[in-house]
Length: 304
Image (cartoon, rainbow, N blue to C red; front, side, top):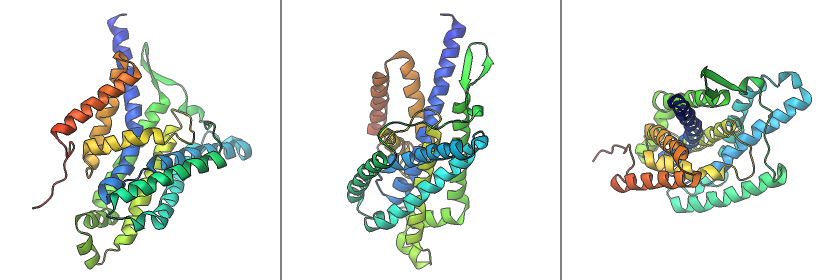
């Protein structure tokens, strides 16, 4: 194998890591908002990703059946719908369940784990146990060849671009909007936030729903690289928690850096090792770094 071939393979492997990074980051962003900002351990976060993926599939099926001429244009609209549907279910879950369990993280873990099992069974009953895939527009298919022997999937570039837009929007909203100001005030001092007139109950509900909506966008991105089943979201929940914990539970920038590091380490390791061994190596590196730095890569600053 020539040097150029090895170089091209390494580049494509690195881009495969960017695709994994995009999905992990979208999952991690939603979880960082819910877990890092609110202290809620949401074990059903993967199921909100599945809701987003199923929304894309259902809209794809409806478009094929009733408006086949729009099949090339439905996908961006479907991504917005995936966010809104997951947002609505997140709002309902917070109102019905989560609001009763604040300041009880272990109870939120058990409650949302039960919620995830119930949602998986609902998916099996309503959609079916088999994995499904939407019909993607032609412009998402194929690959781009910037050089001979180097093929970069177009769907991977689209997912990466979508992730950059969503990440930028979340950071802008958190640090430059009234909602972000209310969230940061509530996290810093809930009693004082209530005293100055912030409706912390509404802030919590909107924050949880937005986190779930971002998971729905992750599900929409996931449909471009894999098929969706009732348990698809649960396959990513552990990795999403690793991303948030490794980066620092209250740091969105830490989530970005840790998602990139985990995805690239795993992808590049798979070039030299088997998939399971690459996963083990990645976990060992994370555990070793967390032993040296338990607060994560980016620790939140607290006044003393």
